[in-house]
Each structure stands twice: as C-alpha cells, then as structure tokens.
Length: 155
Image 1 (spheres, rainbow, N blue to C red):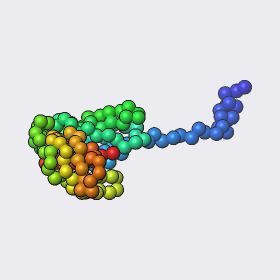
Image 2 (tube, rainbow, N blue to C red):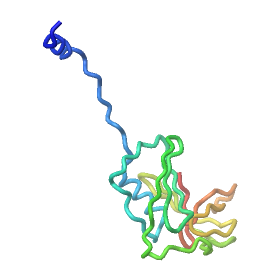
Image 3 (cartoon, rainbow, N blue to C red):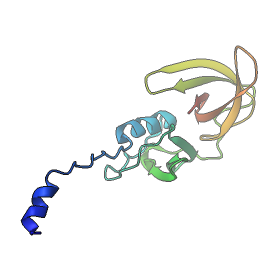
Image 4 (cartoon, rainbow, N blue to C red):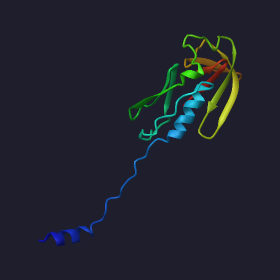
C-alpha cells in the first residue's frame, strides 16, 4: 500500500468530537470573593489559571486576613487569593460579632440576594463560622462573620 492511499483513506474516517474543556469563570469567582470579604479588598485571580469547572459550588475560606482560599473538594483544586494589605485587614482575634447581638444575615446566590436579621449565639471574628438564630426561631444556622454585625451564609 502506498502512503498516498492511506492518507486518502484516513480522510474518510469520522473525526473524534473535540470536547472543549470547561473552566471556572474567574470573573464569577472574583465576585464571590468580593462578596465574602465585604469592605476588605482582594487582588484579582490570576487570569493565567485554568481551573476545571467544579461540579458543586466553590467553597470559600476567609479565616485568615492575608488571603482567601477557594477550593473544589470533589476535584481537589485549591487556590489562595491575596487580600490587599492597603485596605487594612482585620486582626483575626478582633471580635466583630458578640454573643446576644443582633446581626444582619445575608444569603447570596448567583442571581439573588436575601437579607434578614438574627441573633448571634457566640462571639466571632472575620472568617469564623458562628451559629445565629433568625427572627423566625427554630434551630440555629451556621454563618461566616464578614464584618462588624454582618454574617454571610455561603454554599
């Protein structure tokens, strides 16, 4: 067989479909970080990163004042986004929410934001998860302290 015949035959073989790799939208992740930090600012996520799309909501950890950790548990990737030092990060030990204090509870989704008030069951500093009770009563819910008197419920 000649090489020419093999190349002609190969032209008729069905081409394997090329599947485009699905990556996380870095603009959406930047907005999620900004929402979690409140008044504090973070540097933008490096646009050279190509993070595989996470099948569940990306988890955020704001427990350290110098950075925010984003992770996808099911895939196993994790990145840290540095906060801007010029915006005066809060000392981790500084209490921003006190037990018995009324707090603003915010729940943010991709296309919505809901807010209500509740009562803090424990003291908390930025990034600490605390239990709060809503005005409707019932069991407490876990929320993350983001700034003075404000907590977020995240995915």
